[in-house]
Image (cartoon, helix red, strand yellow):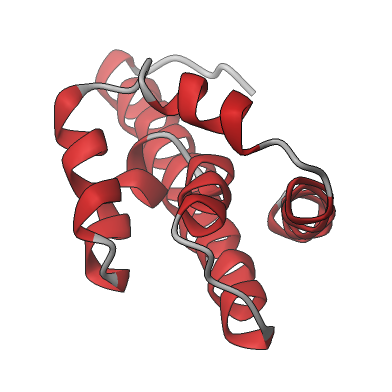
Length: 110
């Protein structure tokens, strides 16, 4: 999941960097909750951690585009955010959650 998401988020970032899409991105960013908008305005790498673990790497790519971050470091951070998001949601949340529910109910789901 993380590998596929990494490929897609790098492609997404490259496309929004090439196109003149800043107006659309600004409209999309206004739909985010207030604390995410605040993180976008701060513009530090640590401000994007809540975005990665809650809504995923694609809003992080949008934030990097809004702040005009470029280069290999950005792509490395996007790939890292895909792996962190996949590990948390797929591994810990869903995998651990299903295991806990299964053991709690003593059911054999899978």
